[in-house]
Length: 394
Image (cartoon, rainbow, N blue to C red; front, side, top):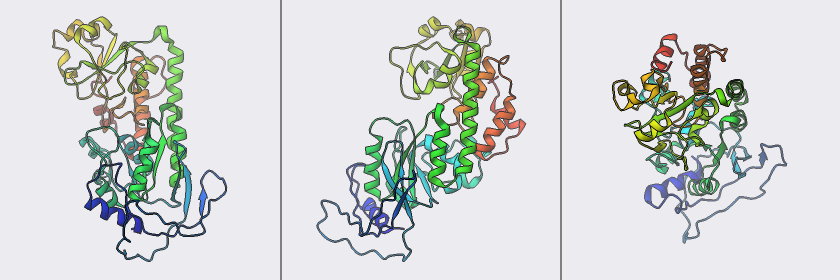
């Protein structure tokens, strides 16, 4: 482990300071000449770089060197515009949250030294055991947990990668963590319409251009399918739809929210509210409002009330329930439409387009899903597994 990481680990174990106020001591390190991934002129350092905490009043205790020379480094410009010095040959990566976890698992599972959140139990059916049992390091954004710096430093990654929306002060957050731990932190923007570029950047960063190109090409093709189906159907002929979730089924994913992107692409989202929630739990509503919306089709989250609505008098008031036009969103090991809103949503495009407009789609859903599971989950999906995944979903 590099000297600066060892010192950061010692401090992390001794101090319980807040996430963005702690400052790790760093010893003098030799930095070799760096290159820029983007092809600009190399940025060279001709002398050792010395950094110290402002509160440092004495020299740190000497740490025994491993004797291993520093790896060649390059400058990587992330999606926030930060120029980050990273190893040229990255062999160990950690992630900041579930969105990054899904994306990085697809492109570089053997480089992952940990995961942000535990895999769902269903992942054991699709993932190799060595991936399923990776240590949990916590997550930086969202959820109920937090990034465990002690575990992160013990895992000793070459880099920590954040993937998702570029919003707020993510750049400042990552810079603070980088200074605290001595580990490079980078952010890669990820949006459904531009996942090919997301994978291109990751392939470039990790030296996995060929694999990343295949993943990006799949995303681009499926997104084009979604756009073409939407174009052919036209808004006036699209199905009105609600996505209900929660233990009572009375939360909805509202039109215009980040989580509703696939629904809004392919259907007329009946859940029009003044302030769409940015959270995966959606907007809370009531049965009276559902009756006012009264959509043609209702989708239920995998862990919601799908099993009960058919015999519930209140739900029977809705046209979609009376007519049997309600479905459970496929799940395994993630919700195909959202939660988290990551790369598995391309499965949602394929599934929802085929569900709503079978006369327009010209692909075999099993064939497409099987290809996805092979590319992104490194799994040879069987017909029986597919049927189980889509039970009550078609």
